[in-house]
Length: 71
Ligand code: SF4
Image 1: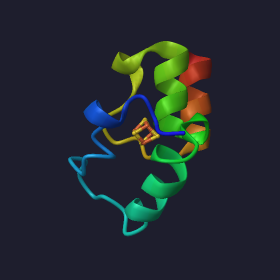
Image 2: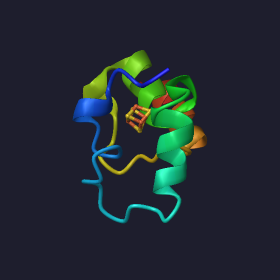
Image 3: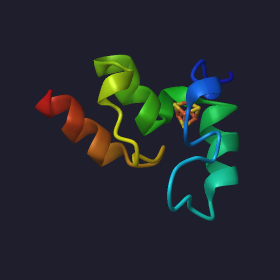
Image 4: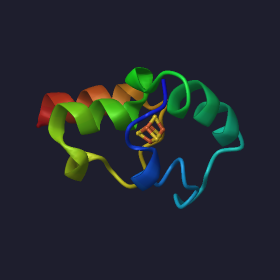
């Protein structure tokens, strides 16, 4: 299932600084297949889009959990 945030997501649209070399792989597994496991998606869903840091990558699950606990 595709992510509902594809259009406005800086990761998917390659506008984040320091995009990892694994970006295309992450897009396939998170953005185009299972967004429920994406750190950006999880924070956006739990707290709202405004809480997603510009530089949060989809695989940064620990950071996502910390943000959720702190807010
Ligand atoms: S899965 Fe994550 S990185 Fe991909 S478009 Fe959705 S919010 Fe952005």
